[in-house]
Each structure stands twice: as C-alpha cells, then as structure tokens.
Length: 561
Image 1 (tube, rainbow, N blue to C red):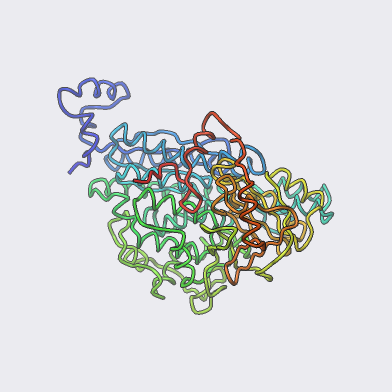
Image 2: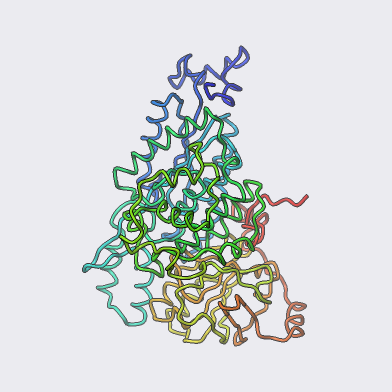
C-alpha cells in the first residue's frame, strides 16, 4: 500500500483534474499522486525563544519526508509566549491558543485529506494543542518537540526564566539591588528552546514520549543541539512507515497509555497544567479519564526526579543521564507501567524501552530508584472541600509546612494581587484568593507565575497560601492551589469568599475549605450575582461561552448528549 488512503480523494480520477492542476502549480509530478500526502504542522515563529528555533526542524522534516517517499505539505500553527504575556491581559489568550492550534491541525488535515501529519511545537500550549489536533484528525501522526533551552549562567549558577520572576520578588523585598536584577534578566535566556525546568512544555513533551507518540529521548533534547535535527529526521521516517501501516493516534492513546503518561508526569514532578491538558487530550481521544484518575495514579507512583522548580536540575540534565527512557525503565521494572501499549513505531512501549542502552541508575543523581524515591507518592494532588466541590489541583511535595489556615486576602484580578504583593501588603500566614480567573471568568484561565514568583522571591513561598480558579505555570511552587472548580464566574464557593474569612489548605487531607457555617455560605450564595462578561466579541468571548469546567479540561466541544 502506497499510503495515500485519504489523499486519493483529491488526487485520483477524472473528476479530480482541477485538484491535480493546482498541485502541478506547486511543482508536483504525476508520480507524486501515488505518494502519501503528509502534513508538517510548523509552530515556528519569532514571537518567543521557545518557537524561534523550529524552522530548521521543519525544513529537516520536509526533506526527510520527501526522501522517505512522501509529499510534504507545510502549514503553520500559532503560538502565544506565556513567559512574555505572563501577568498581563495577554495571558488570557494562552489557553485559548491550545484550542486554536488544535483547530488549525484538524482543519488542515481534514480539509486537505492528508494521509499523516508531523506536528512541531515549542511553547507549552503547542504540546496539548498539537496532540488534540492529532487525535481529532486521527491520521498517522507523530509529535516533534522543538526542544528545551540550555541554562543561562551568572556567577557560576544556572538561570532560567523562573529565576527572573523570582528575582522581581527578591528586588521588591530588598534582597537584591537593581544591578543584580538586570544581570539576571539579561543572562537567563541564552538562546532558543522552551523553558528549561520541568515546567509545562517539558512536562508535556515527556508525557508524549511516554504515550508513544514521540521518539525515545526526543522530549528532553536541547533545541540548539544537532541531535534534535537528527531526531526530527528520524521522526519523519518513522511517520511515513506508520502511514503505510495505518497506525493512528487513537490506536495508541488509550486509557492504559494515558495512565503511562500520567505515571511519568508524577515520577518527573511535572506541571499542574498536565492535569488540565490530559483531561482535554483524553476527551479528544474519546477515552474515559477523570480528575480522580490522576489521584489514583498519584498514590501508587513516587516522585523519582530531582528537577526544578522545587528540585535541583533542569530538563537538559535529565537528558544527559538517560532522559525519559531511564525514568520509564525504572517504572517498568517496578510494574508501574503498562508495557504492552502500542507506539508510533509499531512496537510496544515495553519493547522500545527494554531495547535501549541506558546507564545504571546509580551512576547519576537526577533520577532516583523506585526503592529510594524523592517522595513516596506523586506530587499532583486533587484537593476537595467546600471551596472546590469539583476539585482543585496542587503540587504538594517539597513543602516544609503542607498545611495552613489563615485569613483570606481576596482579589478579583491578577494585577491588583501582584500590586499588593509588591507593596508588601501580604504577610506570612495569609491566604491569597485570586478569582474570576477561570476558563469562563477571566476568560482563558491565565497562569499566576507573576504573583507566585514574587511571593517566592520575598521569602513567602511556604508561609503564604494562594488559591485560584486560574492556573499556575509549571515553574510555580509553594503553598498554591489552582484549577478551583466550580470557578467563581460559575457561582463556585470561591466567589463568596470575603477578606478576613478563614481558609484551610491541608495537603495531608487534600482539603480546601472555607471555614464558615453552611448557613452563612448559603446566605452569601443567595445574594451573589454573576458579573458581566469581560469580553463580548472575538475569540475570548467565544472561549468564555463554550469552555467547560477546569475539572473537565476546559475543552470547548463538551456537548452533553
């Protein structure tokens, strides 16, 4: 089989003469119409360092596809730089971009009858957006991560983007002077590639490798290294063979393979955003997966990797000692992965991992053995209580004081909260509440790295709680709880909190509680009125009108039958 199962709909037969005529206009020959048409969804842009290094990879993919006997069809997908938009109104477009990227891929693959698609992405919404598009289209597909960034250096220390956010807090607290802040700012980002810690981009790329839809080792490579281009070329060759064998994403993304991906997320100490995104990915794959499944996996999978934001090492350090395959081998040998899940190579994940030449665990310090983990259980906990009846998500590892009860400091937008933090109006023992920042309320569920980074920089990362119906960056750590559902805009209890109310965050009990009598909460709920929407036109209004709860992945196509 030539692999042109789909594209023959627009290339074969007398009635398709006009279609072929347009292909001839782009240099196609008659022989090309018997080859598979394979899309290259190119996330290149000069908007952000995460994506500015993708064009050479797209070029390499195109040439490798042609050499493997396919026609390459290049098209673009957009991106939003979370790091640049963070703390501003622009951050509301970040989660929206996940849906736009998915729509772009589904639209091009479906509209052009492509036989397969290779997706290249960098900044963190590129990953779930690309995967959702691949699953919706359900043609043979592979994900190529653009690669992580190398660390910046200053006075012998590694820097990354989170270093700059935390430096802002240090400066406001008088811990560093302006000269030091500027030095950190100018040295943190040495070139192209996605944020260097186990933040959202690297978390999702690692999970895609565990899913079996990216090649081994590819998820932790640096963008600027030659091996990234070589891996892209190999990805193209593997994809063409998958097209010929008709191995599709929904053959690979099953409940068991999602469990493998989530197990790896727990083992590497990955981003809270992975919860939101894998709910959306499961929805696109039509696989049953709920927020409680994360908790089920968390309780049996320990944290093995000592990675930032709360650990010592960056993604490139993990790569140098064996990458995600080393982590997966440890989990496989402990019986914590489903070895029989299919990969895009046509082999099972167990066959792939056990065929690799990996160094012994004891020869490095980044990945711990299952017998001696950093933490006995996973770090991404689902919190519940009267403040989050549908659930909320928190990173609970690495905290010296995993419980706090304190007075609420309530803010209805991120900017006023950040102003209060910078003005030192937030004190140890407070619980900061940031609301109307959920999928519908913000809209777009922005990340709160600016406030959390400022708190950490002021030395309040473990003594101040923060609760929000928005999201957190993968670089966030501390006593923080996000994804509160129902959100404030939907009338969730978080909308009813007043300054001075007592709130409990208890990681041990996975409890998020507003300490008020039920009668008082009911009285406030009766008096509450939903605020007017912040946007009434355009993409943000469309997102606000269609977004599901964070507990359902904030997807836009959850149509109940």
